[in-house]
Length: 223
Image 1 (tube, rainbow, N blue to C red):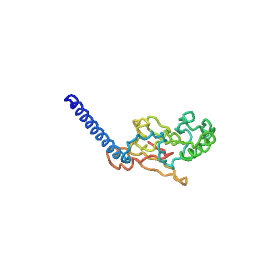
Image 2 (cartoon, rainbow, N blue to C red):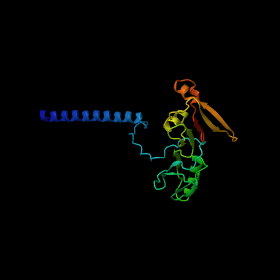
Image 3 (cartoon, rainbow, N blue to C red):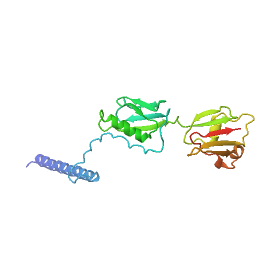
Image 4 (cartoon, rainbow, N blue to C red):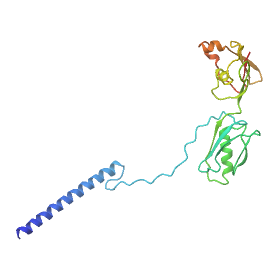
């Protein structure tokens, strides 16, 4: 065999060795990648198919709140935008929704209203997912009367205090008796109690417990 042929044979053997070594390295990397991703040895890892979107877990309900007239409700039916909407409870205590019709809302909790709407939608939608949230509370009110800038009735939120109410009503008039304020509160059995509030003390940090959170139908008297 001539020198030229010997050189060609040696070159071919060297290339074959390099190719085999490279293949083994790639295979080993694939093995490690597969095992790291939970795949069986000897198999390449495959991407899992995209999971379909699912409705978010429903918010835990405070089932103690009872819906009233004029409350604003946010009603969401999953994947049904034509039914979902935000609307107020009418003065007759009812709301109206497409496919659902007239529904009594006043006197029910959000969870009870959800169940009623879902039951009615079952004739049109498979397993309807309904969420009812009270977006704005307008049915619960308090009153503030006497020597304030804007006496009247105001919507009650869960965090309204006596100081909040006074500020909302525009503060005191010139001759208001700021030490003699009191709150009239209706009891469960129709009784009425009077709760004193000394504005001068409270703003100085004395008797801060007097700055109570208001309850529905409380009346603040500013003499």
